[in-house]
Amino acid sequence: MIKEFVPYELSVKLKSLGFDEKCFCNWEESWSPEPEDEIRMVLTTDQTWLRPGWICAPLFQQAFRWFRENYLYHPHFFSKEDGTFVWCIRWYIDGLQKDTPYFSSNTYEEAELACLEKLIEIIKLTKTTRTMKTAMQELRDDLVLTLETGNEALNEIKDKSIRESCQKVVQLTLESVIKRIDEELLEMEKEQKIDFALTVYSEIVETDKDFVDVIKSMNL
Picture 1 (cartoon, one colour):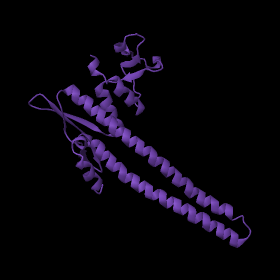
Picture 2 (cartoon, one colour):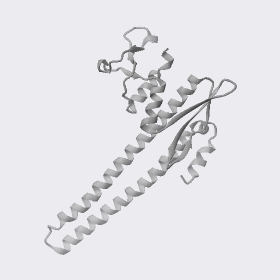
Picture 3 (cartoon, helix red, strand yellow):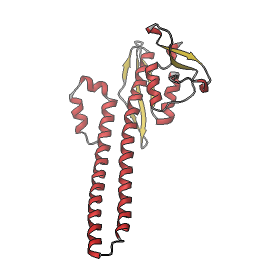
Picture 4 (tube, helix red, strand yellow):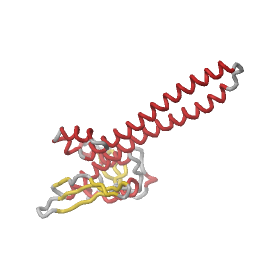
């Protein structure tokens, strides 16, 4: 039955992405001295009873639903005549369907595990980039506000020539920094698309090093 639940290592990564839904089971560190019993699963439906260090152990279907509802990524699995399975991750941009490559796994359980690992990898990259972009945008907004309020403060200077000189220096300096931030945001957007593509096609990158150059040369 334990194979129905997301493994401990991936459950920890899901928690780092914000997964906090109630689960039938949780992972906890065992008090057993045996190394193989270091991590064990505990059955409980009462999340308020969770001890420090306990990690929610969702079912695979629960984890996939969480990605669908929160990030609009849809896992798809297909069986083949030889008993193996292929899978991909699907999402939509401006109404257009996007798919990862179709990956192959020997069993359905291996397909589920590989797909979940790929989803975690993609979302981790997306969240990291989004945090950096948000910080840059907030800095830009602060500089724009500083430019506006700084000019108002400089109006208190009585000497007109000194006042105008100071305002000019402040304006040129802040506008230069704001322009540089705008350029960095555009570059960050491009780098995000490249990193996303390399993450989605990581298995190809590992076997075909020239593929990296192809991705970077594309006008993403």
